[in-house]
Image 1 (cartoon, one colour):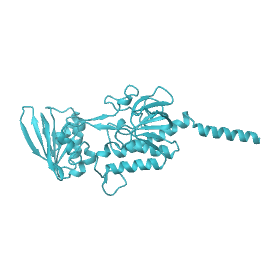
Image 2 (cartoon, rainbow, N blue to C red; image 1 turned 180 degrees about the vertical axis):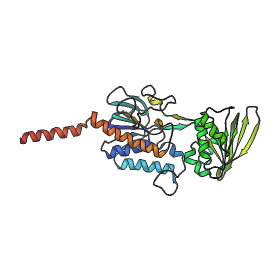
Image 3 (cartoon, rainbow, N blue to C red; image 1 turned 90 degrees about the vertical axis):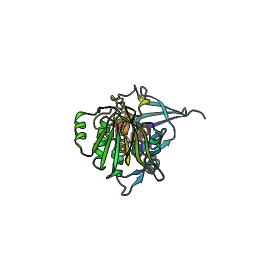
Image 4 (cartoon, helix red, strand yellow; image 1 turned 30 degrees about the horizontal axis):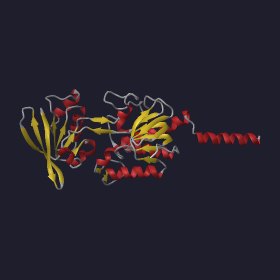
Length: 334
């Protein structure tokens, strides 16, 4: 097929809660946004089963269903959703220019980056097999399901210790497993962890396999190997992987200011990036909360800020032509 070029007032790259919410707000502002959805439309929620903490639903809902509803709402109010992957962006030109994997070109007066972040995993086949059935990378999202159960947290940084402390609000016992003999987490967090009677720490050990039942699918334990080569199995009900996240910023690395962990830097109380007219929303700019509801809120902010930027810097040509026509008519009447 021949290459096509599409121009829009707002181009949104990414399609999780942040991207879809930005599309909804931009469309309702008559900005006719184009949203290129990327490799995984819906983001991490497409691999999340029960969602109980998204406002507005009394009963548990399915992550993929929630994303389907957001996509449908964005289309209903006028956003154009494109199934393609942006592979290159040029932020030095105006309008901004983005090239898709298909070869199609998208230009835009403003840009919203909502490419998200991915949890780092151990890379075990059993980890993948039990994802969503006892294996999680988000204690805030899934800790509620493990009330009065025994769970393990894998990791030794701030994320792992914070996740473990949060889980003590729900679980009967939290086992923190770290491959070294000391944590990298801040000392104040370590002190809180060691002082909590629900917490047990296993040092110098790595997860060799996650154990469980195939039908119904459920985690029943883990197999560990310590630094001396000794193997042991521990019975438990859930495993939380907390070895960090990788923001999806390869596309704009060297083109926008990033923090030391690779997340897009945004202005306080804003989604504005280091390039005027470019905004970032959701997990790609949020190393702290990483929740669907906070991502959606940032998507709303990005669309509103894009609308304000356009009004101040890039007037709508159609509206400007209509105003010129009206001025000419008034002049003729005078």
